Every structure is written in structure tokens, then in C-alpha cells.
Length: 347
Length: 221
Ligand SMILES: Nc1ncnc2c1ncn2[C@@H]1O[C@H](COP(=O)(O)OP(=O)(O)O)[C@@H](O)[C@H]1O
Ligand SMILES: [Mg+2]
Image (cartoon, rainbow over all chains, first blue to last red; front, side, top):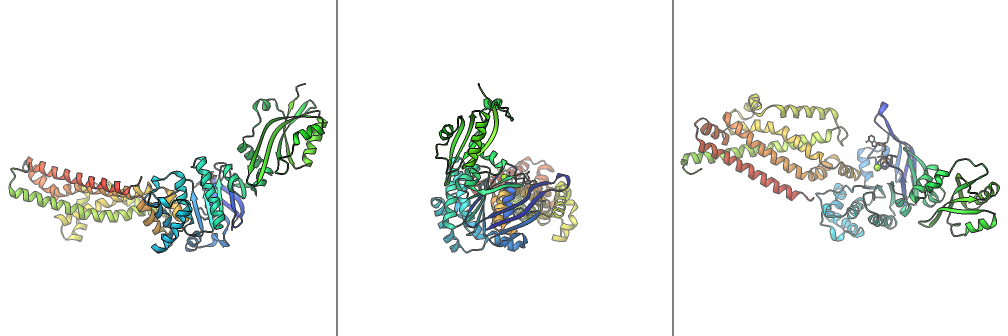
């Protein structure tokens, strides 16, 4: 439904040129929810604004619903934008208009007549839970209600695609949950394709089917969400997930930890359990099977939509041959192991 | 203070008040309309905006600045030939309306540009994402959202015009300014002087009150 091909966006020129997007390729399948996550300044906003050409890419191709936007003239682009709704972090509602009139705006712009507009707007207010607030002004609404108005407004022209630029970043966690639930609902009820950008892992985890990690204007990794969490391919993705899970190595351990082993040290490993292995009693199994002790330093189990993800940081206490055997064994089963360092033994 | 004045003088004051109101109203309406256009042009042509025309923007900016930097009293004299061309005379109410309007247009333009600057750029972006045309952005988003600021701008303009019209009165335009100068200043008639000032203060107060009321009605914040 959305295809970005080799998108480059450079701001300014000469020495002060900033390359905000550096060769982005992204495909979002029809009817899915896709997220782009990244730190502040990574290029997320620039990326999503390139999809409806609010920002014109310096080079590259943008295609939405089979139409190549980058080759359209002004009038063609305006028409194409009716197929692409957009919501924003700060809602961007018109204070001078009521809730009803805000939702009606895109239809007025399309020169629809009053009766038709009414037929469109009322069900949308119903869908977004705003039916009783039609005559209020945005100033009389909470943040979550404002975003609902913005969603209703974005849906008014019956778009095929919805772009969300940090749509929940200005909202508290509880309101975020309800807005995400609404987005999921319209994705399923209306078959709407959603592309969202966010810096919050929670958003990706809750509603996305696919996620891309953006860093320095490049997509580092694109994966199905469950896979992204359970088997991140890139170092950047792992760092992001660790950060989100707050799975940190205890500082006193970190102080003792070195990179090399010398026969008297124990490896510290980061274990990721996929859905299949998370329920198995692996630790006791391992210590029975091999002659080692496993000291768990940090552990966490996370539900990511239909996936379960287990994460653990553990010290393997045993002689070097045995611990090497254990690590090899772990790798042979459905377990992602990373040796993150070595600590001196206590004997 | 109006007591003890001759009927003829009261009649004169009344007529002068009407003259002032006509001058301010006519020049106000014309300059607010034209200034609005110029202000919108300044806003939309600024580099980075949706109708960015840097050269045109620069040119309009210079014109506005020149217009605003000429003191009214000098402008009035300087454009006498133009005034004659338009209304066939350089004295009287009609003649005063020309320089009042010319002086107020750039003033209004800057005030309008200022109030449009207060509109969040995010709203324009949202409108663009809905496929709005440039005129639609201006008429459906910018102007309605800037309503409060625009009414304030109109209020300030009308009040400024009352002051300017008094200056125009001093050099043959009629109205309250003329009475004030002729009777109050030249003939030391302090009752007349105080009366003209009082009437002007009341006019300014009235305009301000109406303006404030309309701003309050326009705002939903
Ligand atoms: N209009 C602009 N002019 C110049 N640089 C910009 C502009 N917009 C964004 N940038 C730069 O592009 C980079 C990416 O910005 P942005 O897309 O806003 O990141 P994010 O949304 O991920 O925080 C940043 O380095 C930012 O400074
Ligand atoms: Mg951003």
C-alpha cells in the first residue's frame, strides 16, 4: 500500500547540508500497521512527512495505493492526499471550530454539500466516541479527546492510509492505551493501512505488525514485531530493546566485568527465549545436565501481542570447558545467547 | 462642560464629530480591507511558507516599511497631488480620507502579518495534508484561526486613525481636530478644547470596548 524507494532528504546545501534521510526503502502492506521507531533526530518525522509529500524528498520514489506521488502535479497530489489521512503529536485542531466542524473540514475542502457532510461526520463521531461533544471547542477537550477528533477528521475523506506522527507522545500512558486501541479498531474495522512513527517501544509492541528501526536517517532493521523483539538482527535493535525492557546489568557486576576470559573468569550471558522455550524449565535442566551453577542477575518476561519473550542476564559458574559446552548447547536449541562479558570467579 | 456653550458651537461640535467618524470609518474600512490583503500576501510569500516568493516578499516588505516610516503629517502633504487626482481637492473630509487610508494600509498589513504569525504552522500542515488549496488554507484556516488577533488589529487601526484624523483636521480636513485647533488653540477657548478631547476619548473607549467584546466572542481558548 505504501512503498518508499531509496528516499533521500537533504536539508540545506553546501557545508551546512543535513542529510535527514539517507536511502530509505520501506514497504507497508495493505491493511497492516507498520511502525518506525527511533531516537529523537533520527529522521522519523521527515520520513513520515515524505509519504504524503508534506516534505518533498531530494530523491527517491513514493508510491501510495499504486499511485506514484512523486510524479504527480499539484492538483493530482491534492487529490491523492484525500486518500491519505494524517494525525499529529500536537493534534493540530482548529480552535475556532467545533468538534463537528473540525471533522467536517476536509469534506468542506472537497466541496461536499452540507447534508452529505453530516452523513459522514456523525458516524465518525460515533466511532471515535465523541458523539456527545460535537458542539464543543477543542479548548474544552482533554488531550485524548483532541486526538480522537483528529482521528475522526483524518478519516472523514475515507482514506486508505493513515499516517501518525508521534500521535500518542503528548498523552499520558492511560490515554495512550485508549488511542492505540482506537487505531487498532479502525485498522480492523475499516481495513485501514497505518504507518506510525514513535520513539516509544510500547506503541510498537501494542499495535504494530511490522516495525522498522531508524538511526541516522537509515533504516537499520525492518521486521515483524514478534521477531524484532525476540530475535533482533542488529546491535542497534538489541540496544533499543534492552533499553525498553530496562534489562540492565547491575553496576557492581559491570565494574568487575572484563572483555577477556583467562580460565578463572565466568562468562556473563544475555539469554533471549522465544515463545517456544520461554515456558521450559531451562535453567534447572542445564545445571542438571552440565556441572555448572547458573546465577540469574536479571530476568523478565514480556508479552508482545501473540509472542512471549523471555530475557535473562546470567552468570555461568563452572570451569571454562563446561561453560563453553553450555553456551554451544544453548545455541543449538531455540535460545539466543550473547556473551556480554566475563567476571572473575570468587574461589 | 458642554453647558454654557452656544447652540452654534454645539452644532459645530456635533458636525465635527460626525465628520471625524466618517473619515475614520471610510479610511478604516478601505485600509483594513487592503491592509488585510497586503498582510496575507506578506505572510504567504515569506520564504518557507506555502506560497513562498522571496523576491516579492522582500519587495512588499520594503514598501510597507517605507510607508510606515513616513510621519503621517509629512505623508499627507507629500501625496497631495495624488489626493487631488483622486478626489479633485486637497482639503475637506474626502481629501483627508486619502492620506489616512494610504498611511493605514501598511500599518494594518504588519498587524495582520503579526496575527497570522501566531497561527500554529501545524494547522497549515494539517490542511495541506487534507489536500487544501492555497486559497482554502487562507480562508478556512488562517483567517478564522487568527480572528482574535485580526479584530485587535482592526481596533488598534481605528483608534490610530482617530488620532491621525485629528492631525489631518489641523491642516484643513475638518472634524474634531479642526475644531480643537481653531477654537481651542487659536482662540484659547478651553471649553471647546476640553470638549473635543473628551469626545475623542469617548470614541476611543467605545471602539476599544467593542473590539474587546468581539475578541472575547471570537476566542474559544
Ligand atoms: N526543516 C528542517 N531544516 C533543517 N534540518 C531539519 C529540518 N527538519 C529536520 N531537520 C533535521 O533532520 C534530522 C531529522 O529530523 P526529524 O525527522 O525531525 O527527526 P525525528 O522526528 O526522528 O526526531 C535532524 O537532524 C533535524 O535537525
Ligand atoms: Mg519528530
